[in-house]
Length: 147
Length: 286
Image 1: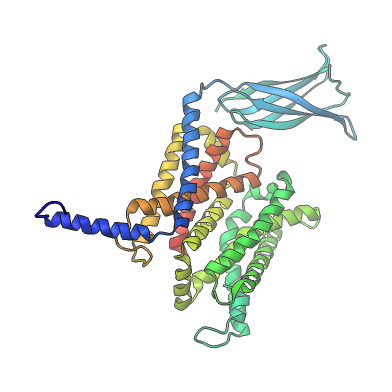
Image 2: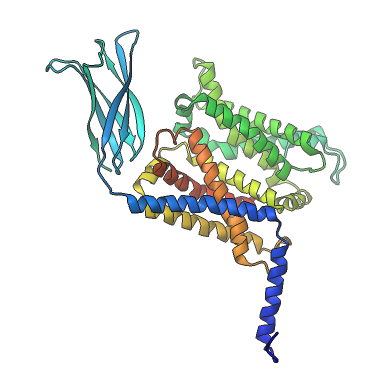
């Protein structure tokens, strides 16, 4: 009220300010705490996605397959593997091939992973009739389908 | 809602309640259970879920649905005066209704058959009983008398009640969509910028709902309350709740196993879109 003739608009503004202040002062602290936690979560989500967008190189699927275990079954053997996609793009229909030994007649088994998103891993298994030995068994991704 | 509260409640203008009221309440509950659970009962991913997902997570989901139902009964149920015990009773009646509905429909549709392993059948029925019980509990709030609805509205206008209701709304929507393969697929075909855009769109739509509710003549928003304070106090926490509920449901259904942080966040945001609308509209619908 420093001005000697306050206009009616200024008066109305003052009044609105007072109302706002009163309304805000009645809000319990708990509500501000809840809003703070919420803000943190939302900001974290958006922030991480923005960070990912800025650092992404959009490299093609880079699938690494490692054998987790080999175990005997009632008939034959099971080799379980884990496939990890280190690339920036997702791969569909990832074809996994496992071979026992080097020679052309070596036993071969294959499996298909439905969908392997970027940076994600999935597990699967290959069946063999002869026992796979560590040195003998090689498992690799043979191919995939683009989006 | 519910049969038990209908039977136990001596308040209300008509004096004591009879067995007939109990039956009416029970039918209402079954109706609500059907409305809420049929879409999921007829979703193929939900049938195979019990075989694909760790049983512990399904058990945890089922256990957590009990406090959810007790809370829902507290906020949406008929009487506040009868306290905790009555809410617990209501919750278990709702759970029973959800269970019977789920088992009955799954058996009728040939999803569960006599030859199946008992554990598998239990898991299938129990997961599907959760949305059914939410429906059973809410059925009463939908069909209650005007006095009951008035009282209910008072309880919902409390801040904790409002956030709780948002949680229920988002978990229900998330529950319906999380089991499908589409959630992860959508997240993977979206760029990071599209995901951020989806966050913004979810917030805007949610705020429109909040705004519509807050300014439809409710006493708890005094004149002069600035809009940004509504956004911070209702829209933001509501959306955060939708995100958390989506994350929890996705984890329960095994959709978060072995995925990268980016895919996990993306999928959560995708699911939180319907979750946010569920959260925001719950206040209008109930």
